[in-house]
Amino acid sequence: MAARPIRILLGVTGGVAAYKAAELARRLMEQGAQVQVAMTEAATRFVTPATFQALTGEPVYTDAWDTRIDNLMPHIELSRAADAILVAPATADFMAKLAHGLADDLLSTLCLAREIPLLLAPAMNRQMWGNPATQRNIALLAGDGVQLLGPTSGAQACGETGLGRMIEPDEIAEATLSFLAPKPLAGKRVLVTAGPTYEPIDPVRGITNRSSGKMGFEIARAAQRAGAKVDLVAGPVALPTPWGVERHDVRTALEMNDAVMARVASADVFVAVAAVADWRVANVSDRKIKKKPDGSPPSLEFALNPDILAGVAALADPPYCVGFAAESEALEENGQQKRKAKGVPLLAANIGHETFGLDENELLLIDEAGTTRLERASKAELAARLVEEIARRLPARKR
Image (cartoon, rainbow, N blue to C red; front, side):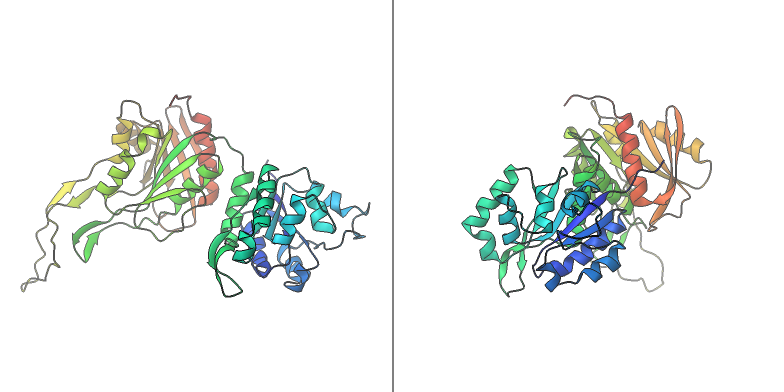
């Protein structure tokens, strides 16, 4: 049976950043959440309730006396159906009311009467954010267990620049869903490699492959949501860093090996998703190689790159190692051979080798006991299921 979707009660208050709440609702829904919107009267001056109703497909509530709720208690009933209340933007005025337990409209009363987590994405002028009264209120809210998402520094609607700008909708959505996700990897450290490596031939040419890095980035995201502290060693890809993940950019296989070995001692899990070049050019030219008059190719000498996964697995006290493989035939047989050759407990084999750059995939998990098939799904869904499988298999390990 599929798990029910996460239900978010999205509160919108009266700040210029209210227009971004529409994008936030869409981002949350793209990741499978159900969104119900409650607005302050001031918020309706910036964005209409009709906008949110069209986006979410749910009625929007603005009035504490709304008769659409049978018992005439929307301030009680709306939060009972939700997993969390997320207020974005959260103005200085609204946070001040929450800090002191004031409840004079539907949204503030919902927050006061809740039995679920409350997350706030502050948005205000830099001077309002820095005001001692606001800072006192923030401390009170944090002490009450309210989760603050942001703010960040940047250009503001007033024309000034400074701290107080609401973080972007995709960041708020990621932070919220991460906060609410189960934490089977709580207290664990996970090290992930992702993307291709690039092996230079000369200053303008190099050898690489078609890896997009999408699967590795989704695994890093899923591990962070599962409660792990995640280090992501990324080859040259143009992907945004997942929320809460520490990213380390590298270019070549040797750089990736050094970055992994510098961090592996503290890792409980190592997931090697990167498509690392087996060979590098040994005689790299320090200037562009010119075409020869006769058209003959340049003489390139190759050296073997380190096998990062096998090197980690061979350590005296290795983390739980997960490898990836792309096989075009005899998937289970070839996968088992590769798993044993690498010396790793779990191998994830792509079913079908034309998966580079695609948003969907299918995996066959291969371990000593046999195989587990993860049916075709988005890479985000597959990553979440893979992380669940890793957490289930992970042996107790002292650090």
